[in-house]
Amino acid sequence: MELPVIELEPFLKWRIAQSCKSELPTSFQCNFCNGHLENGDVGKEDGGLDESDSLLRESCARVAACLRETGALVIRDPRCSTDDNDRFLDMLERYFGQTSDLKRKEERPELHYQIMPENARPVMPTGPDRKWRYMWRIGPRPAETRFQELNANPVIPEGFPEWVDVMDGWGHKMIAAVEVVAEMAALGFGLSRTAFTSLMKQGPHLLAPTGSDLSKYADLGNVFAGYHYDLNFLTIHGRSRFPGLFIWLKDGRKVPVRVPEGCLLLQVGKQLEWLTGGECAAGMHEVVSDGTMKAVEASKKAGRSLWRVSSTMFAHIASDAILKPLGHFVDAPASTNYCPIYAGEYVEVELSAINLKNSKR
Image (cartoon, rainbow, N blue to C red):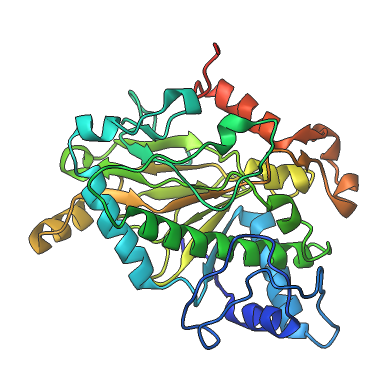
């Protein structure tokens, strides 16, 4: 399935013209608008669209409708280039291609792990997901928080001098894209522009790439990420070099997702579901080996890596912020199912449920 592509450039130009204040750590240089982006300088705290901005209003409405109706969204952000994505994938292919012993040095079970070893029905796994995952924090964390473990310092692997630059560079660009989508969605839902982004400030955002070895697990039926939803606010992915992602639409259909080159995929997480009183449902999805053999053969012939790397970024609501339906979503039919709760408390409940949080301290 090819979701419609939403172009962010018109809204980005409007933000810059309005001197809108950025809520998130999005300061970096690029070739967009003479190489300068808004970086938190004082500007409009919550600038809204004028009646004359009909095309932008329509674009915001499309973002909101897509998130509500499909739980997923494809965007093109001029600040996030194919070269950026390739640089990230190249480095992570080398990282995941190391021996298991070297990768296990980065494990942190006391912090819910830094890296984890490996029709309409989902593929039923016969064991653990065939993947490794590495987690890298993006952006500042609060000086004081009730949820220190969710805001811990990152682990840096040995032998990758470019690690910090590549991870921070790609991670900050993706969180910047999430911020724009969150603003457009808020306006499309009839909320204030910063309704979502103000809650994301100093959130425990994580760049969390996964690696699956297709030299071992390319056969049909292997599960790289079993049927699940994401517990965060919005998940954003760069384009993978191998297929395998399937999502479930609200009508129950299971469809493969194809992300065009130069685009990014976003998926609704449970925290956005909470804030919209269930109007946007966290999308169920899986990543499996279905359809990968052709891509594997092409990579073999080209002498490329056979590691399937996903450049996944989990954008979160701040741990100490309260999750509850916002604005008119208080009156949504299912809103009573979403009682107020600290975002960090909600995350810890979810981590306990999937056995990623230690029961003993």
